[in-house]
Length: 106
Image (cartoon, rainbow, N blue to C red):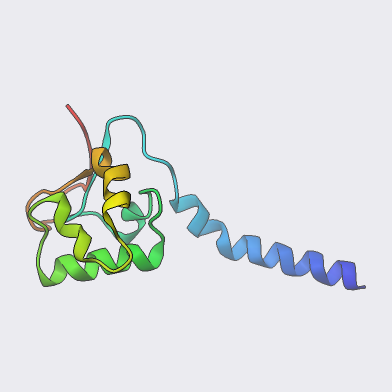
């Protein structure tokens, strides 16, 4: 009985976590995420960025769009080591205008 209950709970957790895990698709070579245009789900593709940190990035850019990648350092939980790790995968374009947020580097 207890084993069946544990199996049911584990299955429920996996079903609920499925969409979040699916959104965490790794970036391909040359892919860049625009910090000013990316959705929460797109920002979550960056290493070390979960939903809360992605929401914090979106909230910060709503207050003031980023002008350079280093501007993201004002977001709580983001430090210089993280930025150094992902700098090749982030870009800072103009403020959001409804265009694609993930671009290929030329």
